[in-house]
Amino acid sequence: NAGVTQTPKFRILKIGQSMTLQCTQDMNHNYMYWYRQDPGMGLKLIYYSVGAGITDKGEVPNGYNVSRSTTEDFPLRLELAAPSQTSVYFCASSLRETSTDTQYFGPGTRLTVL
Amino acid sequence: GQNIDQPTEMTATEGAIVQINCTYQTSGFNGLFWYQQHAGEAPTFLSYNVLDGLEEKGRFSSFLSRSKGYSYLLLKELQMKDSASYLCAVLDSNYQLIWGAGTKLIIKP
Image (cartoon, chains in turn red, yellow):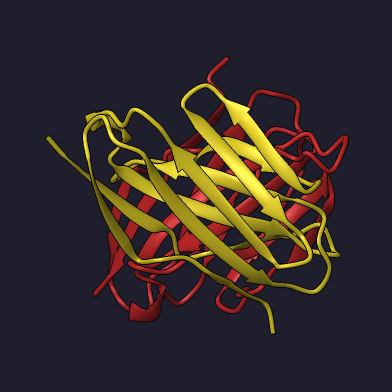
């Protein structure tokens, strides 16, 4: 079991460029999440998905898009990158069978927009 | 609005005990989580409380008082590897996790 994997680990983008952050889980979890974590701040939910074909906005969705075509994959798309999107991005997944919903996190992608 | 407060940083000595507090104001409550996050790494699950009282798990214990909107994480017999950030998170009425900014714990020999 690899758990939750994310690629790339690091990336530097220029303003206006676009990219896709990849996230894959092999635990057959139905729920998946994208968070961003800025220095000294809590995790902020960008988007989440309750199953294949279903996605919903979190607290800070502007500037991002997601898709969920399979149970395993939940890519995050950044269009027209801006310096405000410089952050660490974490993907997570959970089974959500009960309210004791432990989320399992990927190792993160460190993104810098210059 | 929803708010979770934790101290920004704490320092403790190896072998000692430390208590990290968390107070919350959220729209609804479906449980409180503590996660550990080492520098440059992903958060990992430590504990979950949904009922008032103390949950003990080895050297770590977590306490919850729903009426006071308060929780603490107690770490005993501190080891150098416990140096990390400790994140408090509350599951709100929509079953979304609201995260605190985390408490950076520094352990000194």
